[in-house]
Amino acid sequence: MDKLKQYKYIILIVLAILGFTFYWYSYRPYHITKLCIASARDWAKSIDGDQTDARYFFWECQKKYGLID
Image 1 (tube, rainbow, N blue to C red):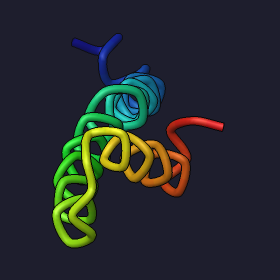
Image 2 (cartoon, rainbow, N blue to C red):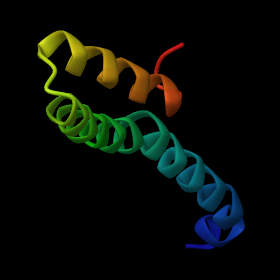
Image 3 (tube, rainbow, N blue to C red):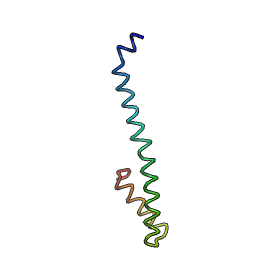
Image 4 (spheres, rainbow, N blue to C red):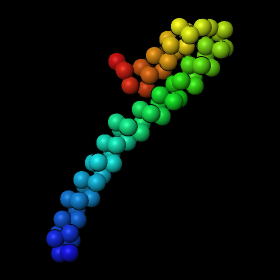
C-alpha cells in the first residue's frame, strides 16, 4: 500500500494520458463523423442533391473538424 501512495501522482498522470488518448483517437472522431453524416444529409436534401453531393459535404465537414487533411 505504501508503494501506491508513493507513486500516486505518476499513476494519476498515466491515467490522464490514457483518458485523453482514448478521447482524442476514439470518442472524438466517432462523434464528429456522426455529426458530419447528419449535416451532409441535411445539406444534400436542402439543395435537392444526390449521393455525390452528400459525399462532398461529408468530406468538407470532416475537413472542417480536422479529421482529414
